[in-house]
Length: 268
Length: 271
Image (cartoon, rainbow over all chains, first blue to last red; front, side):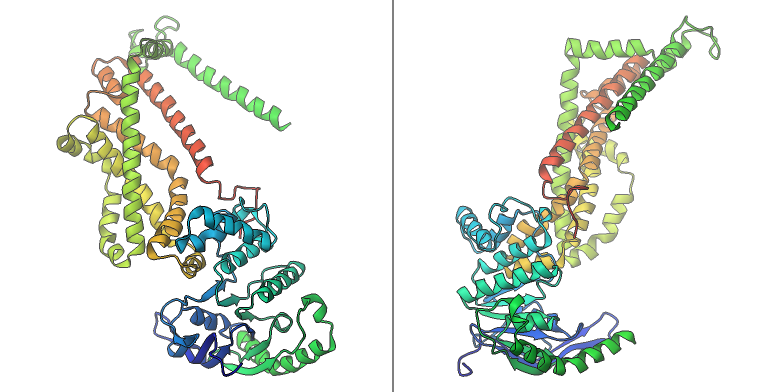
């Protein structure tokens, strides 16, 4: 596996923001991260540690101040053409129906509208939203909107899927349903996933590998754990197995000091 | 309970109307009351008109069909001013909102033009475009343009960053971004200001006609004023008011169709 060209490689990436008053803030310092083809990698870390920044660099929305991003061995310039992105906040176009939202990416790529609509219907069915195609986003619940977003991203069959705490706004039951659904969709057609979360349990139950980031500023990976839990998994049940608890203890041990550090910074 | 109270409300509104007309009738009828303020009993009617004659005049206009040509002209001017003003406001608003350089360059001039009392341009437009409908449309356009412009500008500026980023990642080119993200978002603001802009297009048409024309309801009023026919003036105002209400109602219908995607009160949650 390590000999293969990684699907996504961040090499010594540094991101420094300059605010209008001239002050600098280095969110990420010298971060190196690799995602192999077909691998599900989660990044966990305390709040404000630059997790989203890393993801925005990976998709090409942010230019790194230093270091390099490569996609299947090719240096990234501009937006990442092989990546799909699932946002933490609402990203659907409110003036489009669920079907039109899912079909949007295909239409942008020149697929004829009728074809795009038919394939969107297929995907809506796949994420459990059959019959909801004509609804506007405001007529759907938070969980349903996330499903639409998921279908919108996956319909383009991206080689790399980037997710920025996509389920953090959902209640716990909806969240576990969505996590299982994500695993099901992912295992049917394994792509590389980089999944950002602050929830360690979510990270362990979904991933092949969990990377721990240090507290910001100048955050960087401080731990890399292989999750050897068997698949297929049920995210609700796997949390009760001894190996899960062992892994959780191990990773939490690495994370705890960083979380406390980050908490202390917030109090200042 | 609710329906009965709204029935009561309608009843009171009708009574208020009848009361107002009765007062008007009693106060202006030449022989009904002894003269209180005016020495000549016909003077009150001369200054304030007589409601029955106003209604009679309005009726005559519609019965003879002579009003329709004037109404049509006023409607045409209103619609043209609305469409052209909206198109220009939309184009300019999109351009300035998406180009910070152009926005910075034009900013003081836009502000100056917006603060200027634009009705004063009517005589200039009459010189430039003649006394036909073009000068009225031009006046309406200057009024509508700024409403639409500022709304579009605001609308584009307020598009969620996430929605734009998402569309770009889904593969939207700059043109597609404009068509599928910025324009729909701006349009929702344009529709929100539809009542205002249609109303102002109407004001532009009528004021333009009033200041010099050969057709239109504003022209009717101008004519009547020239002959001190106060009843015809009020009849013209009555027709204009009814017409404006009809336009406003049409806008409400259009709005309901065009903005289905926006949450209405009580129907949904808002994120």
